[in-house]
Image (tube, rainbow, N blue to C red):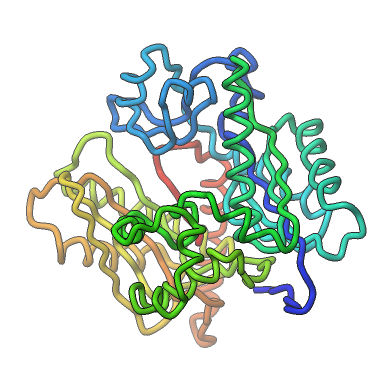
Length: 404
């Protein structure tokens, strides 16, 4: 993990870039007939699908990301449903990040469609840098994006959100349907004034529960938070109160982290129909263990903690884990531990809605040298060959893989 040092005596310039409706933009490039139409990327409504992303035409009808697809269709009866092409999204994201790295090496990618850049050392007007980057991504990759620029990550990201909202409001008033393509610059020294009128729940760290407590105290805007003494906020919210006070005043010293440390690798699947069949569940865990093991070997990692995630039909979700005495990247070992974890929490014939397998406690594989080295090497080469075949022939499916 590489962290760019932050000099408290020198103001920084942080650029936040967010690709507008990224999945939908990629799908429109694949199929131009979708442009201007109400469509959503996600699963089918009869298979408990959810909206992964939706076009701005669909958003006008009330469709939102993470909404059940069945509800999206009720809101927008003519909604076109497009199956996701996640490998394509990952490849296009990589192309975007390449262009960001051409601007500066100080890039922190925080999701497939979002990143921070520290442009403090670039001798050019920040807005011009932002607009140039936006134009390049639009012209070379046909992708719209919005940008926020400020002295820290918090205000830059909120700047992007505010700029997008204002642009969409203006576009809607003109009767148009298009991406916001916003660029918002918050000058150094004006952070608190910029944040002051905004709703309190736009602030990092203010979730639904905290927002409810704030409103109980008559606190509705970020400016309202800023008016409260830090000591009082700490009394009410613990250490989170200190962050609330600092953030409400536009203070955020978090650095740009140019490389995320991999903490865990996992696979999970939500079944279209609740599953009771023991053999189906065992096969699912076996497949997930194989995928996780393959990803571990690809990253030259091994892990000591095996995790199981399981969700019942009533949405109750359990996580269980077991820690081995060594690190492993072997699918059989991962599968065995995951099956034992499942059997420890699942009753016979109990229906399952979601199941997932993960490995954490990651580090470099530790190999014991000895008499059986040749057997191990042959086994390793066989696994690598299987991994290569799986990568070559594997198609997009309902599985979701996470590397954190």
